[in-house]
Image 1 (cartoon, rainbow, N blue to C red):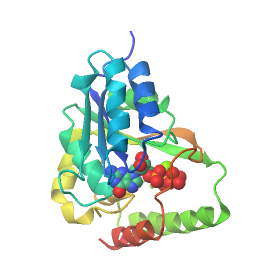
Image 2 (spheres, helix red, strand yellow):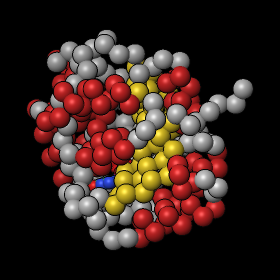
Image 3 (spheres, rainbow, N blue to C red):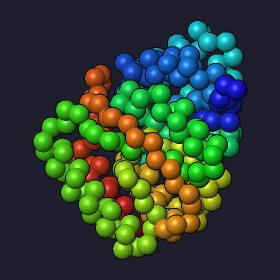
Image 4 (cartoon, rainbow, N blue to C red):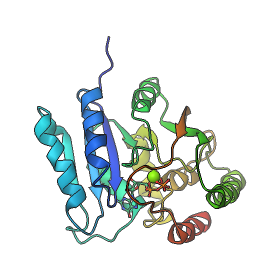
Length: 240
Ligand SMILES: Nc1nc2c(ncn2[C@@H]2O[C@H](COP(=O)(O)OP(=O)(O)OP(=O)(O)O)[C@@H](O)[C@H]2O)c(=O)[nH]1
Ligand SMILES: [Mg+2]
């Protein structure tokens, strides 16, 4: 029997992704019948929202299954982690998958993540098997931060997985909400590492974590948002 995707919501945070979001939505709607999508946009202008909305005309029933929200219009402060948490709260399905808008996360992995969730894994992380073409300084900074973060999880007896900084992962919505409700202050809203914040709040061995390997490519369109601000937020994450 073909897999069903009605019980999956993909949450996609966006910041100035007008060149990518339309392509991604088309790919997802074309390949995964019944899937639910939530775009959570923080852009200061409407171009990302417009590019996302334009896709809906091409897919029957998409209006019911795709939500596009502008947090900027709601007067909410910009933040990747806070956007993801907001998107999850809007999801009405048993499972949620978080992914980037910039096509760095191969959509084929939605199938593998969904399968593992259906098998009973409460958290399934798409782990970067390899990062191609990253600048040397980014490689070094990323590695260093990863070691510190891993040590933080280890010393606290928290859950961990092969790629604790992945931005591509799926989970049981109820597991996330339960964990978040008890640990709200430990999630760093402006930060980039919501998976790390989640792992931090789960005792080691408490939930069944699955992994799906993939190759991460350099972004082709739009600007990167990773920078000093995100590193500062991550350090806050380490100590909260
Ligand atoms: N809602 C929201 N989304 C954001 C924010 N910052 C980044 N994003 C989105 O989060 C995802 C990850 O951001 P990226 O800039 O791609 O970060 P990255 O993948 O570590 O960096 P690159 O490899 O250079 O792309 C993308 O879909 C961004 O559009 C933000 O403040 N708010
Ligand atoms: Mg990216």
